[in-house]
Image 1 (cartoon, rainbow, N blue to C red):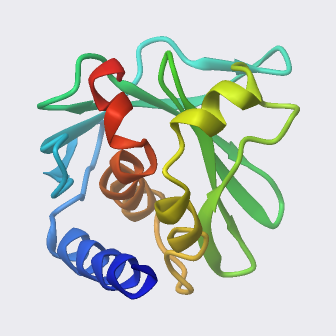
Image 2: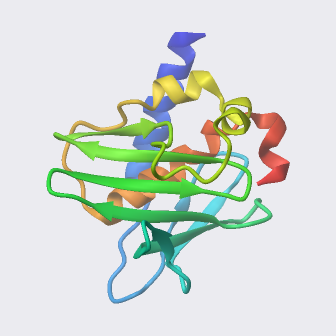
Length: 163
């Protein structure tokens, strides 16, 4: 099972790398998640996330087969960039530190939903396979595209209809 998830992760990464996710001057990033969520469009959100009483750059990912958009807040720090990924029912974060990009459970200071609720909806196999998605530096747009491709598999399939 572990080998299958690793192989699936590699395939998704290669497919996502082939998807055009370039945007300039506010244009949408588009691609295909190659999951049940289908194709996606990433646009800058009209209403930004508030983190510690400060607004952060925020994007919305709309999937063709999901009921509501996924919001992504971007927090840039000196040596790290953190993407807070939220729906009304689930949240995780993706971080890029020291050249390694991957998923993490939401840090306590950013958490809005109960941790137990998120853990119940988390596909643990996908979570562990996504802890390292890339070891190469990527642009913010490329990282957003990777998140759009990888995020759907983090949510246990029985909860897909709730997102």
